Image 1 (tube, rainbow, N blue to C red):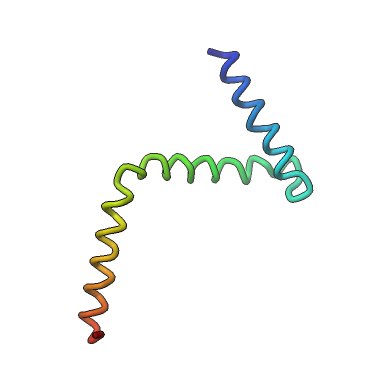
Image 2: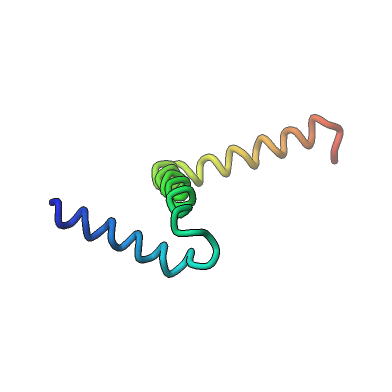
Length: 71
């Protein structure tokens, strides 16, 4: 288990080195990676309801349009 964890951590830092080099200082990686991990986790958790939410949003947007005197 510990070896797998270390491999994942190493992979993440190697990607950070490749992608973020010359954009952020090495010490700033954690300031970028942590928010991205949180956003990705939220995206993964909300994925099953995405279509339903988008349909509801479209209905609400259409309702607001008509309530404001649109077409």
